[in-house]
Image 1 (cartoon, one colour):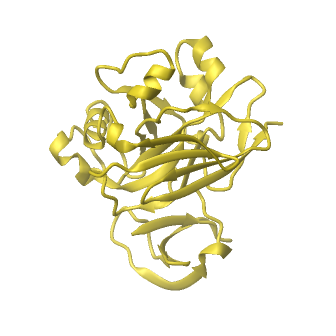
Image 2 (cartoon, rainbow, N blue to C red; image 1 turned 180 degrees about the vertical axis):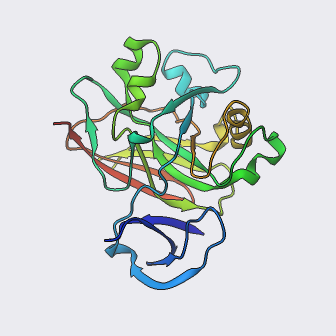
Length: 254
């Protein structure tokens, strides 16, 4: 099932994507819901970020090749950092390049969407807490990341966490899923989740050991090798096999 969050005159609402249409639901997707009789062509609706999380935890250097391209060895345990909810934007929204940075990079990722309150869950049960998966771009001011010595500012600018286009609830994560980034149609990153150092159940359990995860919270699982700079005027696409494509234009901040 594909769960989308769409713009409406009376405020955002959720729907189920069925082929080329979105069928609105009568509630949120974190509990029981029913389909309504309100149907709209997918091409006619504005898709929003599928959730606005209370928190976003991210796993750094979770692909060995990406750690190597940054000059690091693979970490011995998950390396967790966070992004603020104010960084979230949806499909088609502008990634804005801040004047404070001279280099802003794309980072294509598979994102995990938490479906229920979760605290101290064992690895074996961790997937029971997952509602589904979406595409994410962990946009990063690389020069500030290197300068600051920690990652909060570099990862936290407004617009630095595109999510979408929807939540896919039926994804076989046991298989290696292709994760790609294209800039202006040219492939820059081309990896597979089979190469994750720490798998998704481990990530969920690790994060839930130190923080209570709430419905709608997001866990970014890491990016493959090939990260590179974005420029104003670019269009950046994140593709995750079985989920879809998240596309965002890039512009200078004003």
